[in-house]
Image (tube, rainbow, N blue to C red; front, side, top):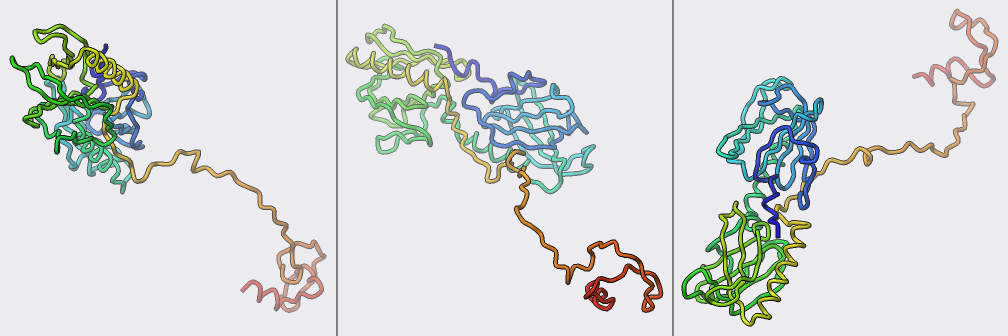
Amino acid sequence: MSAVLDVLWEDRDVRFDISPQQMKMRPGEVLIDCLESIEDTKGNNGDRGRLLVTNLRIIWRSLSLPRVNLSVGYNCIINITTRTANSKLRGQTEALYILTKCNNTRFEFIFTNVVPGSPRLFTSVIAVHRAYETSKMYRDLKLRSALIQNKQLRLLPQEQIYDKINGVWNLSSDQGNLGTFFITNVRIVWHANMNDSFNVSIPYLQIRSIKIRDSKFGLALVIESSQQSGGYVLGFKIDPVEKLQEAVKEINSLHRVYSANPIFGVDYEMEEKPQPLEDLTVEQVQDDVEIESDEQTDAFVQHDREPVFSEELGLAIEKLKDGFTLQGLWEVMT
């Protein structure tokens, strides 16, 4: 079984000039906001670009030269602030400063909205990053967390319990610990019956392999976690063997479903989403209206009549049609 996290780099890496393939949304990745006219003030000052905000990362790319781009995973972000920056396109203006750390190297990014008066650059990135930070239980292996309340699993949003197995031994110690197993659509959770705080939460995102192996306690369920999560090897004893085999089959099935469409847990929606151009373009419809002219009041209709001298005005004018007077025309004009 291949681990999802081994190929998942989008939220855990900072990359420059990525390929179009790497720019595409991976399964489970959702585009939350798209901001036009954003300048990468530090790296490409004076270059107008587009900023994409997803549930895993932010992507900036130049509009004039698309191969000039960058991808910043939320897990690399150390700090986000707003400060004044010197933009070639805007001059002195408020900008978004993002400090990151990736592979022991620090990077600072400064983004400026070229269009004045819009705070969306700040609100979108800061709010989505906060949603990412507060949903780590979906993505990170956790030990001794506040998982259980009144002997029941505290469910995450979008989480559903598929199975609960009592009498499961955790084989991490010499004598083992008796506890309860929860199998959900996003993770596996075990807790000790005598001490709820002695527990482990293993997201499918962090599972490298699930196997049945022989141990000094007999056949056991062995879960190996990814290297990024610490490379743990966790053993659980489930009796009878038939129940163990059923549990492994169910976990493998749920893991495959999850791998095809991961739930990363970053739940955020924009209050105002930019409308596509097609939605803003309205086809012009010809009004089915026939316009009739009122000859008594339409003083500006051309009649091509012969000129005559007007003593009142002292100049030549077109001969007035019957029913019109100069006084009447002046009243229409005023």
